Each structure stands twice: as C-alpha cells, then as structure tokens.
Image (cartoon, rainbow, N blue to C red; front, side):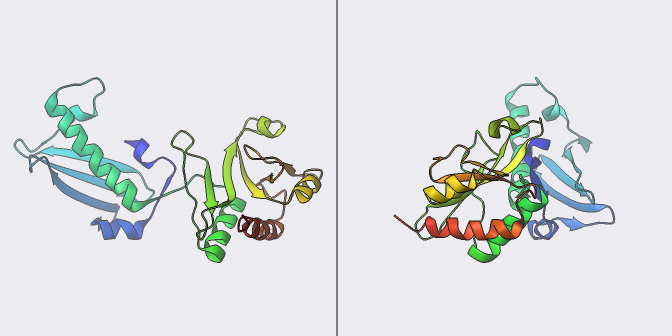
Length: 221
C-alpha cells in the first residue's frame, strides 16, 4: 500500500475535493466496491499515515485476504484490484509528487514555476527521481533535475545528491567547469551542458541568472 504514496506529499485541500470528510483525527473516506459487496474505508491521520479497512457487507466483518501475500484466486484478485484502484486514485488526485527535498531544490522549482509557469516532467519510469524542464513554445529542454551518487561527479560520499543540468555556450561551459562547484554536464552533451549541486554551494541568486541564460539558449535552433 505504501508504494502508492512513495515520494508524494499530501494536499489536504484536494482530499476534501475528492470526498474525504474532516474528522478530529484526520480525514475519512468510504466507497462501495465490487457491486457493493464491500465497503472500503480510507483514513488519513493528521501526520499523513494511511490506513484502510475492507468491510464484507454480508458479514459486517473486515476482509483481509487481499492483503496477505501469496493468496490467490479470482475473487481475491478482484478485491485486490478494487483496493489498489481506490488507493491509486487517491494518490493521483490528492497527492503531489515530491522527489527533490533539498531547500535549494525547492527554491529553484518555485522560481521556475513563478517565472516560466513550467513544472517538472518525469519522463522515465525506470528513473523516477530524474526530471526535466522544457520550454512550452518549442519543447526544448532548458534544465534537468536529477539525483545522483557523489561518485558520478567525482565526489566522495554515499548520500545521493540533487543536481541541476543547465545549457551554456561552449566557451562558457568550459569556463564554468574550471571553477569550484561546477561540473561537466551529467548525462548530457558536455560541450553544451554543465552541472551544479543543489546544496547551496552555488548561491540561488546566481543559479537564477544561469537558468535564465539556459532558458534563452533553448530558444535557439
């Protein structure tokens, strides 16, 4: 069940729009499933913990076989499918994807949203923690936010880094990567792209200027 809500942040306003009721302990939703054979309830506490109950309306008791690993059978499969379907809908409509958690990453995402009206696009199912920004007018990328291990940038450490790839003119890229805290473009054409760690090593004000330049470069054919 937790997989539906991994890397996602709860939007409480959207819970109410979906149909959840606010209670003293959090939020509560119920829905009849499988031709009203069951009543499924979903409770989300104030701290975001999700719990469920599947009530067999014929007996009034909780049904749990769909939660037991290695249980099989057509009917159990139908119950499990209905269970997953509701949680998937709640995750899609009431949660927002959150991958990049560093303060500077959040600043940059807010800046791009406010200035360009663009949102991150997660294009790769195999790499759910990598995303790009592209211009709306010509669909060209002007930035990528990625998570990488330090060794990929020639750094030490085991904790994954949040980085941004930006466009630059070849002479500017060469000049930048000869400075501290700038790296050759990760997974990009290293002649035209460079990388910065979103850990505050490069001030946000400087990053905003570089993003503006990258955005303009993406306009060129």
